[in-house]
Amino acid sequence: GENVEQHPSTLSVQEGDSAVIKCTYSDSASNYFPWYKQELGKRPQLIIDIRSNVGEKKDQRIAVTLNKTAKHFSLHITETQPEDSAVYFCAARSFNNDMRFGAGTRLTVKP
Amino acid sequence: KAGVTQTPRYLIKTRGQQVTLSCSPISGHRSVSWYQQTPGQGLQFLFEYFSETQRNKGNFPGRFSGRQFSNSRSEMNVSTLELGDSALYLCASSLWRETNMNTEAFFGQGTRLTVV
Image 1: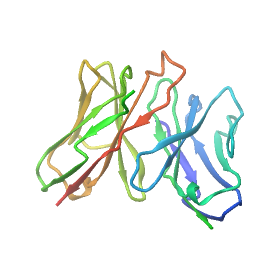
Image 2: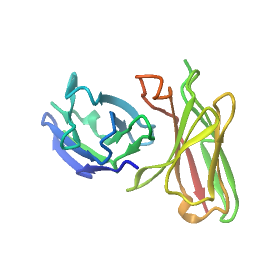
Image 3: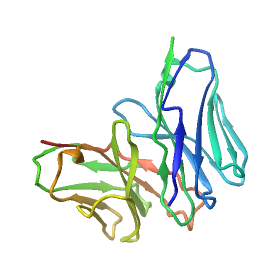
């Protein structure tokens, strides 16, 4: 089955700086790559996703890039704010398989 | 439209007991997946159901089982509970990916299980 690795496990940045989280996946058939944000005590919520027919997608301060050849995708958050502090999970899924998640990145944005 | 509902929110059980957790998906969603979340372990996949059939299963012992009903509601059961089963159990519902391009998974609030 799919194996998703996520780095780093913790990330601390100053408010206003950028944050980048990287994930790799193993199943070349994976075609859907979502990113979830989980605030303390809350459920994971989708913040952005990308499909395999697209190389990059942006939504305001958040962007995701996908390199199918290298089988890796990244989350970029620009102009970080304290409310961006949370645990971020990447995931990958193909038509034939369930969604597998990375181990998560705890992002701390220091004011 | 109502979100994914999980019941109960909290449970305390004793080692050796069994427990049943419930998940009601978003109306119209027929795919339900279950995950175990523990500190430092991320979201570990348990199983996925669609149309009352288990479609995929993660690497958990046979003590973990589940089922899905005709109304798409799903239950998971853990028998002979162990201390290590203490975790947040999350379910997620989505449209079935083979027939829909929009495969976003929506999570419930989770059931926090504590085994003592």
